[in-house]
Length: 153
Image (cartoon, rainbow, N blue to C red; front, side, top):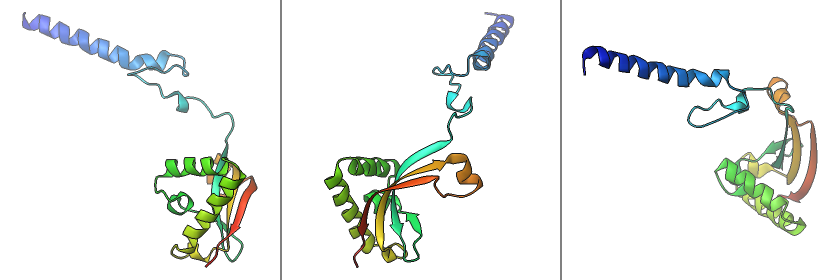
């Protein structure tokens, strides 16, 4: 093969590669395919900015509520696993939720400050507006207490 043929093969291969890379710009934004992903989760506005999360909260002596870190809330440092464990325990029936709340209270009573000061543990379903969370503050729109138990020292 001559140098000129090598040049044209290189140019053709480059044009094909560039063409493949720009095709997602001309597709429907909701279409996604491997290996050229358009990441459709970022390509359009979220319809509802609300987020509902089941939280384990420490009620401090001044009455403020603070979400417990995963290690105390679920005994597991992995955030996603802790969240799933909380959901499983809370929605696994009343007995299971009560037992879980007492287990969390026992961990909190042995925890370092400021957690050990907690008067009670609340398990709550909280509704947040994800935009307001960052613009105004982390207070939920609504909160329903599902379970409460005291922290004994």
